[in-house]
Image (cartoon, rainbow, N blue to C red; front, side, top):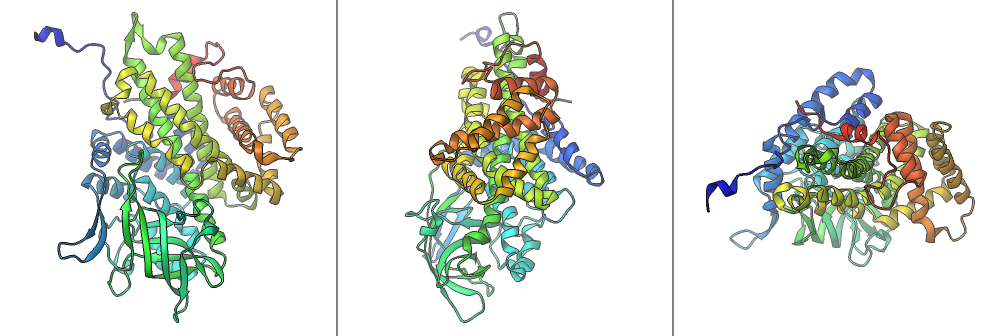
Length: 545
C-alpha cells in the first residue's frame, strides 16, 4: 500500500496533559462558592495539583492498565495454605496510593473537608473510577465507627491517614488502612434484615465469632470490613479485621471474585465466615442504625462519582467536536450537534452543582442541613446515577465510531456508568427511602422546601414545578406505585433551583425550559432553539493551558 493513501487528517488530538480541576469551570465555581475563605488558598493548590495529575498521560495510562489487567484471586500459597489474597496490577496501587496521599479518605476533621474531598473525588475519578470504591468506603466508615469511641480512636487515624500501605498486617502496626463493607447476602439483597450470618458472643467485651457468607463484599483486599450479622439481640454491626492483633490471619475465605460488567479494576468478592473474629460496633440489635451513616456517605459518593463520569464524558465529547471538521467547519459549530452538546452539558453541570451542594451540607452539620441531607441524598442518588448512563452513551455517540473503540476511553466510561445506580441501593430502594422520609420525618421535607424555595420568583417554570410538586405530595394514596415519578420531579426541582441561583442565565434558562417547562424532548439534543446554546457549550469545554 502506498504511504500516500494512509495520510492521517481530521483526527482529534487526545485530551491529555491538562488540569482536570482548573479546566472545569462549574467545579471551580462550586468550590469557591462553598468553601470558607480560610480554606480556599490551600484547597485551590491541592486541587490544581491533583487536577494536573488526573489529566496527565501517566495517570491516564494507569487507568487503562488497571482495567486491562483486572485483579486475580489467590486462595492458597504454593504449599497449600489458605491465604485469600487479591493480586492487583501495579497501576492500581499507584492510583490508590496517589488518591490516599491527596486526602481522598480525609474529610471529617478539617475545615471544609467534605467539599474539598468531594471536589478531589470528582477530579480523580476521571482518571479511573474503579479504585474509588475502597476510597469511598474508607471515608464513609468513619461516622459508623464513631458509635464506639474506642474503635474510632484506634481506626479513625488510620482511615484518614495520607499513607497507603498495601501489605496486610495488624492495623496498629500500620500508618494507614482501608476499610471495606459486606452487608448483602444471597437470600436478602438489599433486604439486609433477612441476613443469616450469625454472631456468637465471646467472653471478651464486644467480641464475637461470625459464621455465614456475604454475597457482595466490596474491596476484599482491605484491612477491615464493616458487616452485619444476627447477634442474640438482633441484627448488629461488626468490624472484621483481616489480620488479628497477634498477626494471624482472620478467617476470611474468598470464594470467588465477581465477573462484572464494568468496574474491572476493582475486586468484588463472595466471602465466607467460619469462626471469624469480630468486634461489635454500636449496640446489639441496632446494626442498621449504626451502619446508616456509612451508607449515607457512600450514597453521596455515588452522586459525586456519577457526576465525575458525566463530566469526563462531556469533556471528551466537546473536545472531539471542537477539533473535528465536518462540511467545512468545526463539528461543534453545527447547530444540531451544538444542541446535543449543550443538552449534555446541562446534565453534567446540574449533577456537579448538586453534588457539591450536598458536600457543603455535610460540612455545615447543622440540624437544618442534616434534615436536608436526609431527603436530598437519596433523591440525588436516584436521579443523578440514572442520568449517568444516558449522558455517557450520548457523549460516546458524539465521537461516532471513534467513541466505540476502547482506545477512546469511552467504552470504559459506559461500562462504569450503571454501577452507582446499583451500589448502596438501586433506584427503587432510593425512591422508597425518600417516601419513608416524607412520611416519618417532616423536618426533612421542610428542609427540602426551604432549599428549593430560595429560588422562588426567579423563574416561572421553576415556580410552576414547585407548585405541581406540592399538589402531587398532597395525595399520598397509592404513592409507592408512583414513587419514581415523584422522586424524579423532586430531583429536577432541586437541580433547577440550584442552577437558577448559581449558574449563568443561559444555563438556568435552558435547564428550566427543558426539564421543568417541558420545552424539550425525551432525548438529548432537543433543547429549544436559542442563540445561547453556544455559550453553554463553551462553558463545558475544558479550559486548556
